[in-house]
Image (cartoon, rainbow, N blue to C red):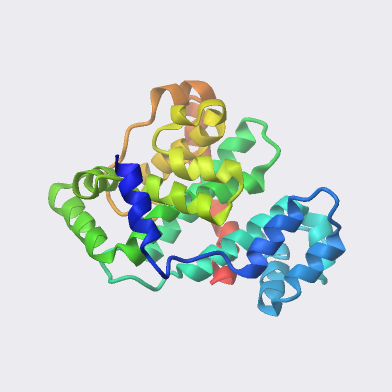
Length: 285
């Protein structure tokens, strides 16, 4: 099976990235209901650069708090454990795969622009649906394609062939991956997400964003990112590695109970929200 072959390949990569010690520690602390803001603050304070990033993001237009947040403990209290964990996680992954990198065939800067747009659009869809964890949904959209970064960094020769095939035949990057590699970026991302111990919801989004029904009871949250991904491709926000627009999964469209009028309104909101969210990419890199 492709999954077994892929796991075998990944296990042989000696320098496959791992989350930083601090990021791992913060994920563990924030998942413990008995942890305090002081404990989380002490863990983050081991990395003063990370403290600076979080404070700048907390004071950016992305959150739009009226009062200036001056300490990391204050930021944790205001943002909550889940948001702090997600910011640390995003910063850690952005550090591993900065906008400048790779061999030039895969444009990481355009990739991150698409990912940012997908995060924003996922958040706007979730808001329309009345969901509360909007910043978490943003992170789902931002990081859903991390498998492509793994392929770009650690399967560079194979992935270059994928990008060439995409351009030659004008096909979806996922179709080119399956044709040349026997697996796709979603499988790669899902395996690495498991190795990193990422939150279950994020891992499911990474693994199943091209096929939401496979997420079973989590299909609705995966469908949000699936739809956001397609919409961002349709209006050309960044570049995810190809220029072809995939079809929206019919069951996902029905499950989210959206219509063309709502989608048009989403388009009008996306650009403004992207400007606010750019702080996350600027400060994380």
